[in-house]
Length: 164
Image (tube, rainbow, N blue to C red; front, side, top):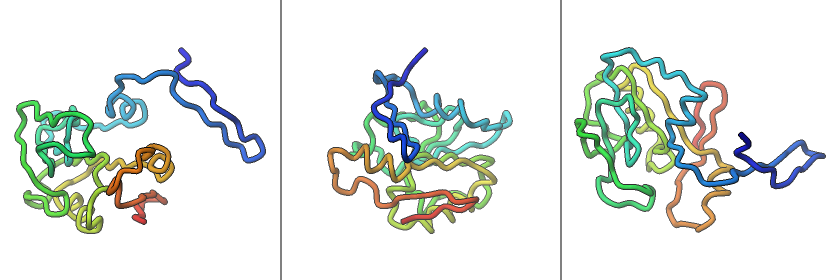
């Protein structure tokens, strides 16, 4: 099936721009499963930090800073009857290494203190997954020019995250 259409090509610089032909009901986990093998053993303690309206399906614990409406969540908070806590990624209310896996997707670009957030994720989790938008997607998709859209552009170079 052809889900994309070419918008234009910048042949001299080697860039070709594609877009989806239609809006799909695809969730974050749908595209993540195509590229990532989470390999989370049965019975693992899994925390979703910033669970929002699409909790990580392998999570059995959830935390979100905003239980109510926020400009950053396009759908209603879902807890799926799992243990839920309100709190900030910059100061997580859990003991060190209390989770086998910590999932944090589309949260770090919003935090005031990325150093504290990353330290907390590493402190409470034995391993995990972090996902952030690219600078390019931030520029393209903030067409509404929302104030306080994202505080950070984040790049991965080698095994390091750079917050700009």
